[in-house]
Length: 295
Image (tube, rainbow, N blue to C red; front, side, top):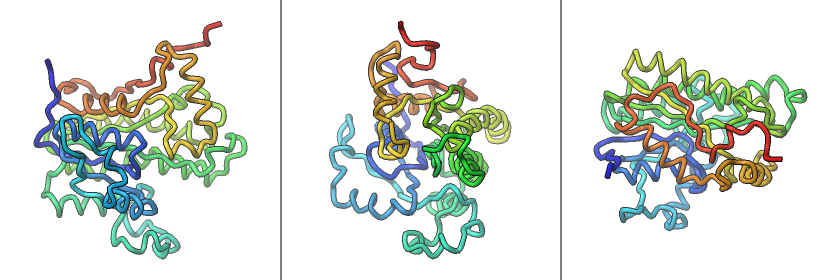
């Protein structure tokens, strides 16, 4: 029996703010394999997330199959829309949910990781981030600002993450992001530029696989996950209908579970996947292969 062993490895998962989404599931599976896990949490959600953890409100979700509980080595405030503090608008700096944090930018958290753990502290970096403020709007009604915000927060943030966290990787490190089938197929109602953002994310995965591979020997992959009714996905407004549709029309007529994404991510970031880079791996019960539903 082959067991994934990530003992001695450290992972950073950007985009964990509750125990219901793919980011949390990935963090948990990495911990199951023995990795130490740090996470980046959106500043407006940071206080409530850390408070719920301290109060034991997520105790059942933190239980590991091998015994014990998932314990985050560090929880950093992170807003991936900002590369440095110079990029942060004054109104954001003065927002009460941001003012309590001295640093929450990409470069700032990379620097803090170095201070906390040394020059090469990471082996695995996960991007579980997306934001489309106009996601409910059809593309024909999407503003330039809404479109560019979606691309900035959901895809350029991965470029920035690789730029700044690549130098922190130990040999044979791995980057992974989360995409969605809207990158290549039409998903009516998933608007506001989010389909373009996911398409850019997948294209950048391939380019960065080349560039990060040559520069740091790092691998870069993407998981295109099926729809899951997470708290973040509820912003779409019809996520339950999307899940039901994919269950009905997938080769495997089951809803995707976060643990399946977590398990795939752990494999892709492990030595067992040492020859895999630049790939988009579908974890969607086979829905992506369907051209038309069964008639």
